[in-house]
Image (cartoon, rainbow, N blue to C red; front, side):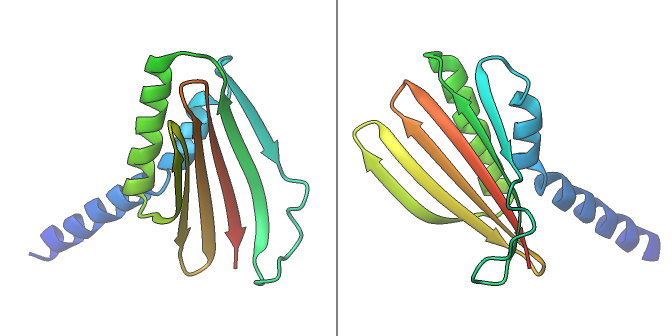
Length: 133
């Protein structure tokens, strides 16, 4: 019984750590894809904001090609990752086919913010900012 409980706890820990890395996996998957523009900004990493949070950098992915299939796939991956990682919706703006969705997730020592911008069928942008408490 003790082995079963330990095994069960280990399985849940592995599932949780895999889900917690999905946004980062999206960046890893697409950062070298020529159809995307990838930007990493770590210029203010040592700064602490007014809420006492240290900035760990910002990553951005932009898809600027009119490839409806890739946009749909990429958008689906982002939505699945946000849901699986337990992000809370903080902002939702829609005008016609344009959307802006903001999400945040806080743990004991960290805060992550994700912004997903979709401009019709023309371009998509994913922004990920991470802060340490």
